[in-house]
Image (cartoon, rainbow, N blue to C red; front, side, top):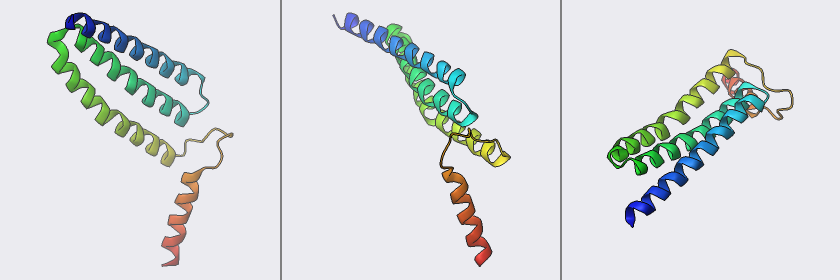
Length: 119
């Protein structure tokens, strides 16, 4: 009975993961600029990969410890790498989509430089 419940839970998790991976891929193709695409790709694919990995771990019992370790690793590293790519792109001068308003990073960057000049 418990194996059947865990099996169905694994199938549900894999299905949820595949759905979010599809949404991430769709967001990468449909969104207008690097920063929006990066956010769609990171948030939805992180959830999608974690759900899929845990679902596979429930379906193949021997892989559960490995899938939990992979999920934890992805939860720790994927947002950090996405932030690093976005920050480096912004500093390199990658332009925002014209409809992005306001550019809060530019306002904050300007405040920091003005404070440095006043000293």
